[in-house]
Image (cartoon, rainbow over all chains, first blue to last red; front, side):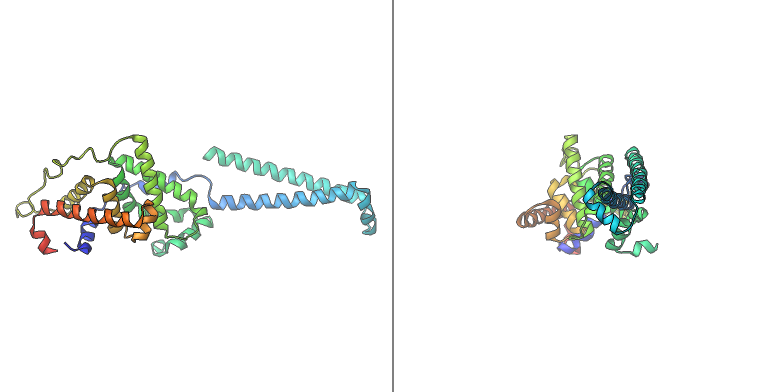
Length: 109
Length: 193
């Protein structure tokens, strides 16, 4: 028997899982999709950038040495403080939102 | 239907971009061959199907790390084989204890009798019984080589066997499979082929 003929014999013994197998697999896929991960990391990135800006602004407000620069830029100290607080609030909201997302994901998986 | 014509890398890219439903195409494309491989390792079809479902979920989870260095099918079959061996270890059963040498030739319709011609289903059942009668690694390699159409190098990747082991096992598997076929269908089959 030639080996290439064996192929057709082996192929004749093909098998199939149950008819609803694909649906079962699709229904049991984990809730996390790559898209979810992508958007999650994107938001994490935004939060990281916001934190960095906030740290820099805080430095402007708190360090007396840097105060020189704020005067030279003619930005009132009050404006910088307010901007820092608004950013902090926004960042806290973003982080809470991320926390909810993680909890939602954990409840699925 | 358009999705069926898409190549594996195209589908994987779509899934990575968030088109989860594209995974259905890959499942439909590889479920039959993967199921045959799973049944080679796990004798009960229910166990094989469970292990296969687990394998597809593992593959989906791992898609983000799939770099495409090998074909998707090779990568998937490796997951299937490993998952089935893990499941087999959990079940602690030998897949080839169920079909003893004496049983393999029982209840086979007469191939030469015109009154009871052998239909496709009969032949399929016989081939699968022969497969279950072969040694686990022989049946697995036979299916990987002929059914999954993998190269020797790809089989090495799936099974982690050395090149020489793959070749020797495949040689033995062919001989044993042929021996059983001739015993069931008669020596004339050798001239036909």
